[in-house]
Structures are given as structure tokens and as C-alpha cells.
Amino acid sequence: MIDLNFFTLFCTDIPLKIRIGLVQTEHICNNWLNLNVGLFHESDPLPPPVKKFSETKFTLWDKIEIREGDITVQELLNYLMQNFRIEVDLMASGVRLLWTSWQPTSRARLGQK
Image 1 (cartoon, rainbow, N blue to C red):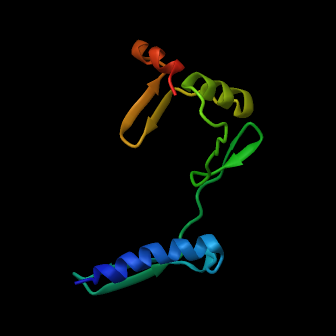
Image 2 (image 1 turned 90 degrees about the vertical axis):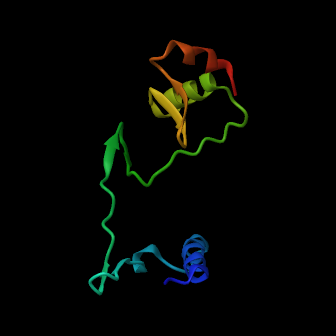
Image 3 (image 1 turned 180 degrees about the vertical axis):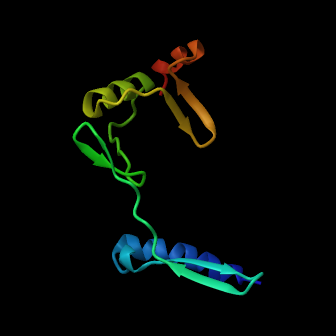
């Protein structure tokens, strides 16, 4: 049985060390432990595929930080179109659907924050 306290410490310790620069991500490996067949496997993670959109390269690990303060949905859509030339079809947070371009009921949310 895995000691849950050790597992929790490990899961919070490594990301913290990466964030403050004590551990480089190049030194971290993927580990598999299969207790059924007694297998321990270690491998280097593959880098994510790089895509190109309008002279900008990005991966699935990239993010866009928006620091515009308290804005409405319509202002957010305008910001993304003006700065990144991104047309948004769907906005979600977790499992909740916040806004869609194809549902008429979503138009009422454009003025909401």
C-alpha cells in the first residue's frame, strides 16, 4: 500500500521545486509501477507537438494570460479577436458551458461579467 502522505508530498513538492527553479523539467522522467507483474518502467516524456497559427508557434502546454480586469464576455471576445485573431465558438470552465456562438440563449450572456 502506498503511503498517502508521501504521495501527497511528492505531488506537491516537485511542481513547487520546478516553479522556483530548483529542479529542471529536463531531469524529470515518467515512471510506471505495475504491481501485478512486478514491472517498474522509467521513460523520458515526449515534447508536445508544435503548431503554428498566424506566425505564432504554440503547443498544448501553452496558455494565454489576459490581464484586463473585470470585463464582460463581449469585451473578452473582442480582446481575443483584436490581439490574437481568435474567433471563439465556445467558452467553458471545468464542466460548465459558459457561452456558445451557436445557441441563441447565450447571446444574453454577452453583457455579463
